[in-house]
Length: 248
Ligand SMILES: NC(=O)c1ccc[n+]([C@@H]2O[C@H](COP(=O)([O-])OP(=O)(O)OC[C@H]3O[C@@H](n4cnc5c(N)ncnc54)[C@H](OP(=O)(O)O)[C@@H]3O)[C@@H](O)[C@H]2O)c1
Image (cartoon, rainbow, N blue to C red; front, side, top):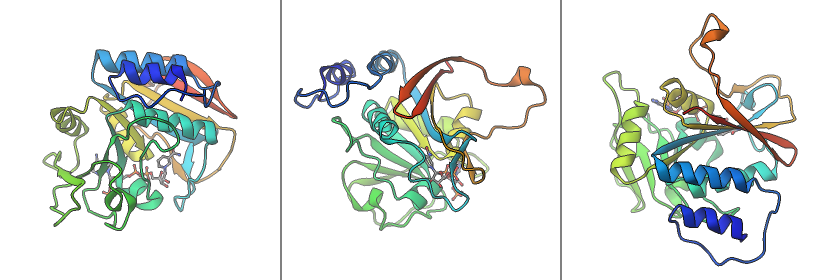
């Protein structure tokens, strides 16, 4: 592990594996140092989306492996290591069967949170089968006996929808301050529309899918004056370009 990455983890108060060879000299260490500073100053929500040039995150059938290249995947795993908890929507958990671990980089696994009000993610999926980290299901519908590494959270409003604010509050009550929202588009868009995302990371791949599942979708606006604008820095991640957007 590189000294740069060890410094980032140390700054966050996380366990630091032994320092050795620099595994990736090209990684945007300055960005990670900056994110770590922000996360220690205040509770922070980071959202990350990997998309094609035409703003798609998957095909219509939900195939998304992989839109982005290996450097972007390393970046995503570093964001997971920086975060205390990572949130995904039910469609991502169901279709991708992700593990949501940091296996590509040294660093601790975050708590895994899946918003699954209709309990459609099968218990045979990795989040429930593999005890690499705690898994929390956000639902009102008690799922019955759960494996010992799993738990349940409720964060619904009167309409039965999960309220992003309430979910963040419930996670913070558990001491989870830095939250990564990893997808898919509908889940990230819900947090963005609620004004709860501090840093948005968009990794754009030089690829056109031309149809399929969109990334960010917000309520319609009439004039561009109402569009979201923010300070942005860009970083090269192999063939992809990462936009680091500072929303607040
Ligand atoms: N390229 C990338 O970076 C990336 C990353 C992640 C995923 N993906 C791809 O994205 C696709 C899935 O994305 P998606 O936008 O279709 O779906 P998604 O965001 O993964 O999941 C949406 C579903 O999660 C539940 N949900 C999320 N927020 C909720 C809320 N506030 N209240 C209640 N329920 C909520 C709902 O489940 P119910 O429908 O059961 O109500 C909702 O339909 C997959 O194909 C995956 O492969 C790509």
